Amino acid sequence: MKRLKQLTIILLLVLLATPLALFGLSVSYLSKINSNNIDTESLEKHSYAHKDGIKNILILGSDARPGENVSRTDSMMILTIDNVNDSIKITSLARDAFVNIPGYGYSKLTHAYAYGKEKLLIDTIESNFEIDLDDVVLINFQSFISIIDAIGGVTVDVTEDEMAEMNKFIPETYKWSENPDKGEMKLITKAGSQKLNGYQALSFARIRKNDSAFGRDNRQRMIVSNLLKEIKNTSKLKYPFLIKAAAPYISTNMSTTKMIKYGIDVLRIGTGSIKQMEFPIVSSEKYSTGGIYGGYGWVLRFEPESIKILKNFIFNDVQFNESNN
Image (tube, rainbow, N blue to C red):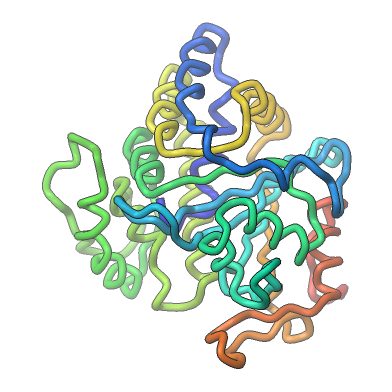
């Protein structure tokens, strides 16, 4: 899973609180999630904004292709489970955000993972955005494909331009699919609303050329939203097997007990209206500037005052409204 952002861990959290009769099977599959190689030192102390009852989970889409070990993270999100305001929030962090990486100086946010893996990326996010993170999840390509295939596909609306771009990626993502029933490779032949399989959906999520990084984020959020609808219409008897499909491709610092607790919280709060924010705030030049800067290439520079808006969203459940800021 490369260009994911929201998908697998939100889906996973929704699936955790399965019916009692299936509980043991679900826990068995959750135990297969890799929890041995995440450096949790940065998560064990609270140095920045933190609030009891609100948990911030960093979700990373690994930029590593099959056979690669260390790479940049192409997708970064903060999933906020807010038991104070009974709210689920997703904050998309732009990979091109211009930040000060501890020990390395200024660069793009996405470079922090390549320099120091999860620990340095966590340190970078916390120190630049002044927010404490509680847990972290790292997801790869195969998780994205496997979950979509396990649920039977996801319906999205594909434009003509998007169709042309995603067909460029499909030959590559088709090779990454480990689904024994994937059959012959299928390109997209028409625009409009249609159900995509796992490798097609990944290709859709990877599109960036037509617009911007946030345009890609919007496509990924579309996949998440529509996939959650598919899950709600799926028999709960199938839930543990969706967990089974994702588990081998996920790494986290969280114990099975904690994941189940988060899953119960998510189901109690509900996923009908997940609140979303993008950071840096690109809708106004007052808060960010995008463009070529020095020798850093194309970056998004953000104003310090925009961090207050970010923290207000995460901790006080106040959504950004440009007319009021």
